[in-house]
Length: 234
Image (cartoon, rainbow, N blue to C red; front, side, top):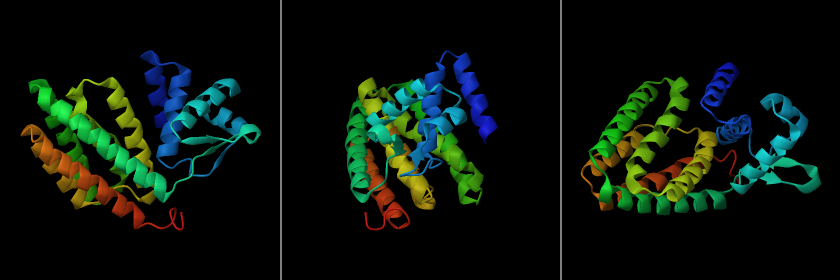
């Protein structure tokens, strides 16, 4: 896994991304995927070695992550991965619903044939991964995480609001962190949601799509709260 990630970031750098941005993405990924668990201390020296970057650049990266509420800055005591809570989970779910439903309205109003094609392609990839997960291939969870976001993003991509899409991406990832801590994949119910959302998108049924997103997100909360190991008493 480490070698695969290293290779990935080398390729990104070859395409012009700075080392600092590549490390930011990797550290952010490790937090969202639970590799760096909630409440864990981020030791600067150890992180410097792990991510192969200087201390000053690392501090800047951690400050950027703090702006997304993924990291807490503790003054002279350093940094730690932000804890999780029922309150934040609910707030993220509400915000995701508002942003995604608004983006759906904008996107459905102007989406063209190319937009429809991108949705078809994204759903095809997502459905293929979900079939393998339903068959018991849990090694595809990381692929599902990527394909899930690509599908949801394809649906709202025609909204033509970069600020809206960036905000949705950040909230989506922070909500995803809770899913990863709870076990992520929700089984056939989430597959059915995606199929219905796909059909509503191609039909330009914005109201129907909004209803699906609202229930989809709420069922995500219900799934997460069935796992008391990290939310108990919070």
